Amino acid sequence: MKPKMPDPAAVVAFKSQVATWAERIRVRPRQLRLQRMRRKWASCSTRGTVSFNPEVLAQPAAFQEYVIVHELLHLKVPNHGKLFKTLLRAYIPNYETIQPRVL
Image (cartoon, rainbow, N blue to C red):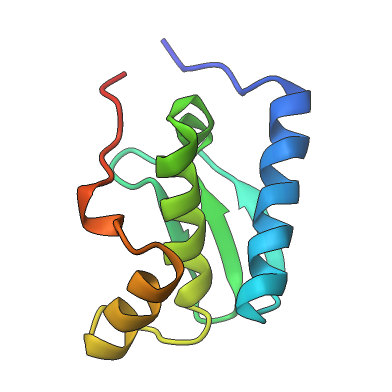
């Protein structure tokens, strides 16, 4: 059975949060999508499309924020190297302790 898409109001709020973080990080995603994924919470393409698994919206706010910042930072740094982790820590100091809730 397929999971249903989140409430439209929750989607609007989530996209607003993404836009707020994009402005703060100073990045401009070319496209923002909600797309079901089997093994990932989100992804960022080399063309600037940032896709989020709709199941992220059912997670705690801190985890949503972590996933948003993580993917948006990939628009600046395409890998998970030292610079990426330094930037991630600058925006979300406790990122290493944030865990998803089991659905």
